[in-house]
Length: 141
Image 1: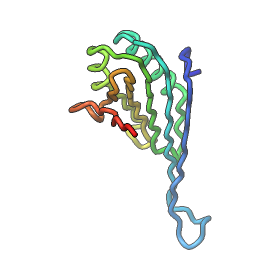
Image 2 (image 1 turned 90 degrees about the vertical axis):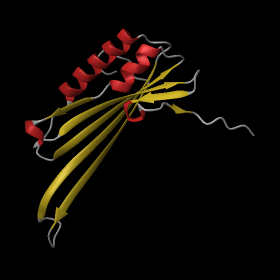
Image 3 (image 1 turned 180 degrees about the vertical axis):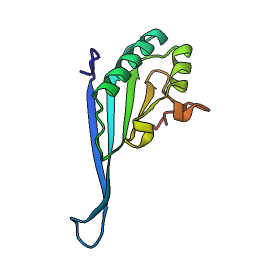
């Protein structure tokens, strides 16, 4: 559960990078990178439903992120698995991006992205593929 949204699956990953001189206790710098993936199943959401969902998730994610001195970035990817998608919803997904810096970037930043997977039309929509939606390969044996 993220806010009042039921998340079907959540995965997280933390990577710590540090540089030291001669001994491991002589650390010059260290930073942490976090990645989170949320899988949400929806039937046929409208643009308004997706906007409300992303507003709520964004507020919850920003509220829960507490950057410390080693925090570099937190990347959150919301993957919505849908049966069908309306054109205005697909347009919203192609334009959605959220970024926030903490202390002008010195305490790190948050990036939130949205991916919409349409299994009926076999198309994946996201900001990263806004020129041309990605189509599933149809492999038959």
